[in-house]
Length: 323
Figure 1 (cartoon, one colour):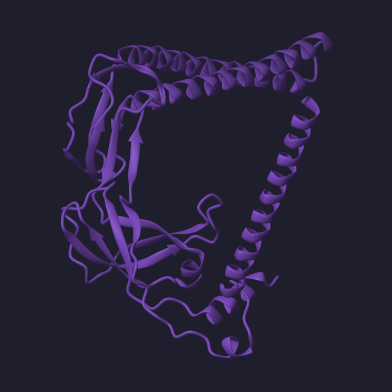
Figure 2 (cartoon, one colour):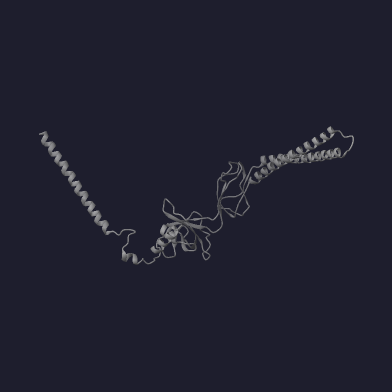
């Protein structure tokens, strides 16, 4: 009885495997038939290659972002306690205006000590020069005397001259060192006052008066007041055909605005991850000012010109492959 059951199970397994193989073969044949009816990308027969498709407008829009021409994170080069910050978010500032002030009492004290040390070094240099001059005159008098001058006196005069020359050089080195120290402290004192590098608007404040600020830590973010530009990405075939001066239309839905812009820069390389080419466009001279468009807004960019022909793309790619 057990042998019959085992035999029947074995036949059932064989039949099941055969049915699966038959189904797989049928699916494979069906997929081959469908693929044979699909056009092969990149392949072309004689008649198709002879007639290139007509150029057509690019109907889709590319997503971009509005960016400011000048953006800077204002940060001190020296650490200190923030004493004052006379600007608020949204304030307009001019170039050179004070944005923040660090506590500089210790710097001023150190600078006063360094300047006093410099004055002392300068006085020591004057004294050493005077002593050297006196030693040189004494040595000349000893050499010009014909009688009554012993060799030891002449040797002592020459030694005093050499010592005086060494003292002058040491005094000059001390003066140089003190001047460098004073210069560093003056620069640090000047850097304790943070000024706007260009005219712009305060976008954010990262610290408040009384807080400790590390060297290089952002205190204020400043955005320039100049006309912004739009950065967007396009497929490879579109990026190869774009050139500087091409006209585009920029639509900012957040403020319901639409502007004309001209392509300024086209990246020379393709982004590895997205396989897109980055393009930058700036408002044209005929475009109205952008008072309501802020940096960071999302925009849609539409190309005003026709899309490139495949033959043009092939010519461009061949030209780029030339050494």
